[in-house]
Image (cartoon, rainbow, N blue to C red; front, side):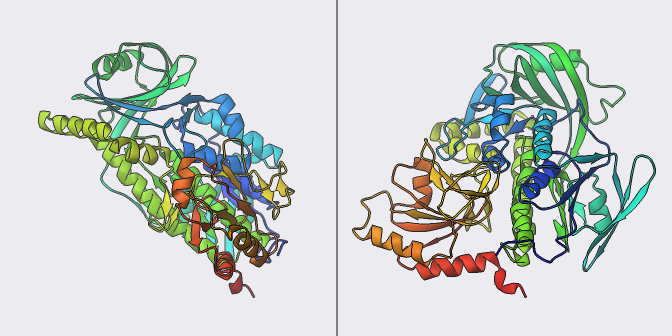
Length: 532
């Protein structure tokens, strides 16, 4: 293998939109040596960035492009999310108690800060954003897309990229030009939001969901006394020319929040109306949709940007593998069903969370409060909602491809030699100081697991036989029993071989006594037999 495929590999991948999703796609491809061109219509940075939380699963995935540590240095860590009704705490979803993530916390920072980190990484990889360049036409021909780009100075340009990724937001021109539908369930609510300096008695290491008969409100600490405040308001109560004032936020904080809080200063404020929308397809030929271009969901739970980033990672490792010749093109067929199913599930769960905060009749309030309290006391809240919020519960094809508790290298791993093929640092499959396995960023990794009990007497022989049978260069990692309990639970009590995808999702468990089955599985997963 090796070398770019002949599928228009000499032409760049065009990424339309330079928000977090488009930047992640571009970084993933560039670090593989894939030529990329990123254009943005001129949105640029704005003081009104809405997304302000990165959940544990995305911190894991952002390791792929080597930005997690810088984000951790920039953001504010949260141990969990607490839920209240009329000032009384009902339940808490603790990120800090997740047994299966190397990052057991949420990270809050402005979307502007997230984008700044990603742009620095893009520049370090040799990429740039062409600001003020708008896609105005797209012909999705059978042999690849042809587009028209309009520059700020009025100059137009015609381009035939090898592939196109539309990450150009909810009003996506790419989606409209492709004729893809954009519909969704009837969730229609307006929010007022602000980043404000707040004096409060509430904990700075939790986000706070506060319910009251008058509505719902979220207080999210962002460090240095700044909090994101979001609350539902009547439609058309505010506009760009009439932003929500400090007095309104203070009044609602007094009415709905637990504890005592004073809104000292608004750094900015705005309002927006949410309508849930999901594209009817995330792919058309060699064009893909990702992020808000593919789905807009309720802001409840802060899932939108995180879901979009996971689109980007899912697509980029497959596309880069195809263009490098590591995988056959049919592997891209899995992008649409995998990510569209997840988007519908996230939309459903965030809609339920939104509706839970907006109930206002005494009977419904009592029922909600009793359900939250009971779920918290029995541990159900922690077992179900914490993984859902953290996005560690994401699985593909039902439960066939769950996310595994792992780290992903920011360098491509050679087959057990310890030398990086590409990327920013040398790496090899290994256990870090916390016992977390680090898998290959670009290829399927084979984990040899002896089980939680005493290994079979012939385990060494079985392990050596598996290694000899695998294709040359396959990343392999021997696991000891000293791994985090979440990972041990996921791998199971008995000996097994786990084949893990580059994004950390389980491909399959295989009987270690049948190494030929592992080789056949890797061959099928690469889809290389379809190549001429």
